[in-house]
Length: 193
Image (cartoon, rainbow, N blue to C red):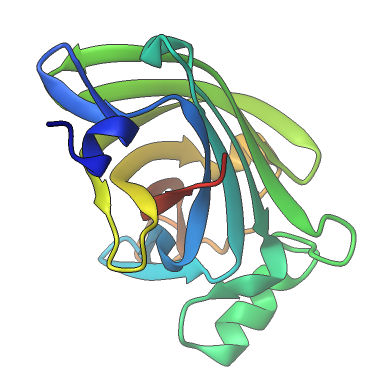
């Protein structure tokens, strides 16, 4: 006898993965975070509180795609003054560029539950290719009857390539804000159709 969860999952390359369909990032179960070096000696962590994504799982999982939109003004590092500076024209310029956008261009299987998601990231009207290291965390059904899967992803970008060039030189050498930004994403996606 086939259980109802079997109808929404399938086996692929030794993994139990979601059935083909459209999934949306669950706003209550996601984190779109980042890490930046501060004064060459420590790390500052933050996140964007508002982000949406549509994930289309294809019959051939390696033909799947992702489209995501992040609200730039939702940046949150738990410091109001720093957040206001990050929203200003010296960084994200949220009044002129209200969103950051990501559109995938391909998926490659690495090993086991690890994949590489290639795509294009747009910040302040500058689009650059990026590669996200993705870990598929599993698939299931919530107590509310929703078909879900979990994932985590990370990449590193050079913020200056996106026009985020503001900085201050330090007397001791180096700069106030590092060029490299690590992006960390964790989430659950819920089946829509």
